[in-house]
Length: 194
Image 1 (cartoon, one colour):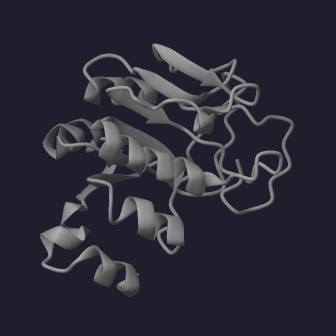
Image 2 (cartoon, rainbow, N blue to C red):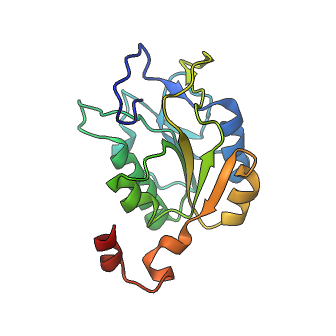
């Protein structure tokens, strides 16, 4: 996971820390239906897991009520995908299937993928207080912090529940007012502005 930076590591299996898995499950009512980018060391324990790199979760169904995504942050040269593809699927799952989706991603507010799939599609963002989030490396807390600040993005319809549960972990912001229909402009005008 590199979030646009070059990071040399022996592991591509950077897992979500325990406290965030617990928090996501709390938002979702106790369990996660789908983890589309899991790995052999994951502690998420979703009902359905697509294990990377053998199983490409971008090509599989996301028709599940609750989805948690901790995507690869770097470029997948073999598949030609980036974090942009994962964020697009998050937004699509919410729009198409009414899924509740939470994604743990690096903060990249100046990028086109944040403008297209987060600011105009998501309901809320939790900017995590852990500015150097300690991912689990191959299932173990190695004590090393990530080189970037991260956020939890929420595509769903229960902002208040997301806020009440995630507020202890960061600054939670309702971004639904950034959606074109809420501020009186159409999506084409909003796309031009972004």
